[in-house]
Amino acid sequence: MSFPKDLWRLSAAEIALGIRNRRFSARAATESALARLAEVNPALNAVVAEMPDEALSAAEAVDTKVTAGEDPGILAGVPVTVKVNVDQKGHATTNGLRIQKDLIAETDTPVVANLRKAGAVIIGRTNTPAFSTRWFTRNGLHGLTKNPRDASLTPGGSSGGAASAVAAGIGAIGHGTDIAGSIRYPAYACGIHGLRPTFGRVPAVNFTSPDRHIGAQIMAVSGPIARTVDDLRLGFEAMSQLDLRDSWYVPAPADRPPLPKKAVLTVAPEGLSVDPAIQDALRDAAGRLRDAGWEVTERPCPPLREMMAIQLILWLADFRRATLPAMEKEGDADALFIFDQLVRHAGGEGFEALMDALQARYRLVREWQMFLADTPLVLLPVSAEPPFPDQLDVQSPEAFDRVAEAQLVQIALPLTGIPAMTVTTGMKGTAPIGVQLAAPRYREDLLFEAGRILEAAGVPSSPVDPAG
Image (cartoon, rainbow, N blue to C red; front, side, top):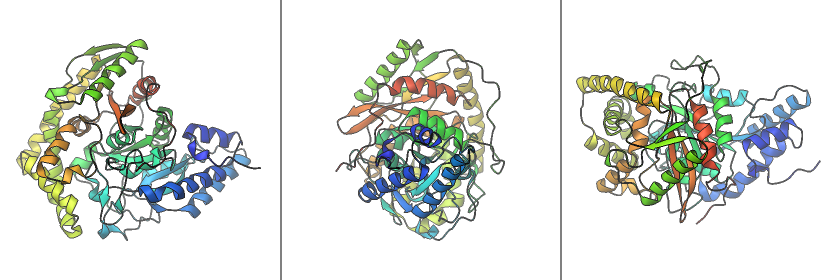
């Protein structure tokens, strides 16, 4: 039997269905994805560790299950990528660091194990900035990742490799992590979609370094990046299965009653200067929700700037205690510059400042929960600007300040633990434009419902060829 050579163009849902229905094999889908990787990755450097033999072996195992009439999983044979800052058995958890190039994982992190259980085929590991600390993707070990839509723009970060790969057709779903926009911003910058799940919904712990400090413990998540909202849903369902090895894992609530179709539009939260093209995208998105029967009101959302300030205090508490010695040993100029800028911006320092920040977080989470109880969807900017020129943040302290201000919403929301999703909606020249949706904890279903409405107006879901 002959197979189409362009199976890599299909969505995850289309690939899994085609394999279950025996229209083509998992091996064929994997070979197609590997061929696409070989074709476009040299121009992008999105995937920094390839594993063709492992991928083909996993694909053959899926085909064996299909032939035997067994359930191959919801991601049966779907080619996916995994970020280099999480453990994957037999591979280095580099996190973009030379000092971790030989840190070989002996077991899969739960999110990777869940992808395998769902039948996904891992074809490669994707790039991240050193220490996964930036909205740009460059490091001294793996080099620079480029945006397939415009090489002069950032692909985002820290999951820049994942978003670049998915946008270019290297896998239908990319695994990413997000503590301050590292899933949502790369998806935005590359013109695709990204989900930051509710904190605790996707189990994730690295056994190469299992003891996280407090900021990462209460805000870092893993989640999917994809070209369609339905693929985000599939990726989330696969990633979020039970694994008690993560101390913070929370099973999905059994009873999730219907929520009112009410949304708040906040175009420029707390005085944020938002680019007119993004304002237009937000108002257009609100109009599409109204046309679909939603009640949308434009008004302020609860505080974001105070939450951003608390984020910085938590980051610096973690960095000073656990990360700075490694940063100094690694000697990555970008990471060291970013640390200096964070120190310049952060308010309090020491035990009392940390305790005050955690106490304030308790109040702010309550305020957001009460707000979402009345109006369960919030429509916000992803960033105040279109995707930045690449490496803008390390050009000067003033450039860093511009970037940090534009990223207010991304930095702030993780403090609440609520889910948020980037939906790409259009283009401003060669730069993608999108919007951000936020919902109550454990209500990713609402994000998917609204996201499908907005997706219809966005850029085509087909992969793009790398642009110069």
